[in-house]
Image 1: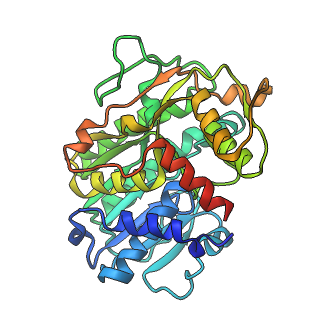
Image 2: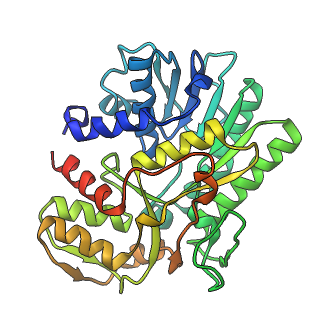
Length: 351
């Protein structure tokens, strides 16, 4: 499937590119982002390229990743666009391969983000969020970066203690750090603290967007998150497999809204501050999410026990709903509900 031939997808990209933001901050500037071929990163690159084409933004994009062929497959104009450059690099090594004296904006989006990775690559999960982040921060500090953004996660809040319905940015729930599954949320927490250290010690300007469970047509086929598995089953015309009672209550964000939120934090956020990218219209219980996707594909929800590897990677949080009011006060407004986001995802991926 060529996603660039899908009008619905192009509509999403154009809509995000029209978000009311101080885009002039990026005009004639440069931006380096890790995780450039991931769900969030690839959509962000598409939005920036759209602004370059339509509004003359002239923003140079350094897309960092380990697999050049993957980048070429995802960005077919990579060889012909002088404003898009792929940087082949393992983020856990010092970043020395960008030949530029100054990079104006740096975003660390690379991360293991789904259950099987948490269970099978726990070391990589932690090191990308700490060592990889430090390498990006060091690069930013030495390349006169105007602003750095660290993509954090709703998982830093841990388990809801039962004292609130929605997590605001100051909430701190329970995480048992002495477990395999704690590697992801604890390394995100440590990453946020590392950002504060660079603000204090090296004077770096850092903002922290906290993403919810994100989904959309740019999801990777290897993604094992429940929502991604549901969508893949639905598109394949198979029953939706639910591997729990489905009473987990989470916030979700369609990728176009996640990227417009990320850009809002990058361009309008306060130095050192964290912002939840979330909206209550996309909060849903897992069993209802499964039923929603089954309804779109005219299939049923069936129950199946997870295998040992899958179970080890599952989140222990049973309720994780985020309060997005702080970001909305910067002017961000989501365009998609969970229903419209799921429908668009399935229509785009179905071709």
